[in-house]
Length: 81
Image 1 (cartoon, rainbow, N blue to C red):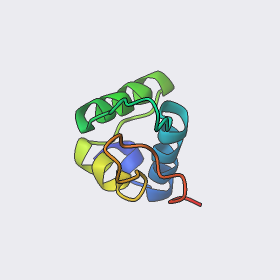
Image 2 (cartoon, rainbow, N blue to C red; image 1 turned 45 degrees about the vertical axis):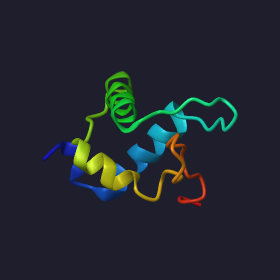
Image 3 (cartoon, one colour; image 1 turned 30 degrees about the vertical axis):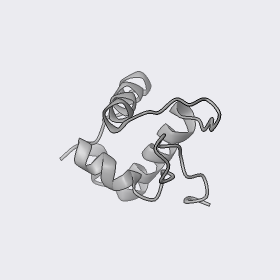
Image 4 (spheres, rainbow, N blue to C red; image 1 turned 135 degrees about the vertical axis):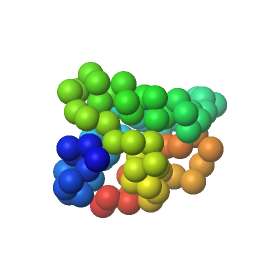
């Protein structure tokens, strides 16, 4: 178990912060970010910010409800509102 997996509120903040800082929604771009690149972006973001990444299974569990069901995996800004 990773250190940041012990506290769900901290994990929630980490995933929300990742989506706010490392992703954007541009419906007109035509760019599609698939699952592997998104998790890769997350682990790179963790490295740059000095946070410990969660395992991929936990990442996808936490992304449920945070991402729009569109194929470009854009953040669902209303999920945390």
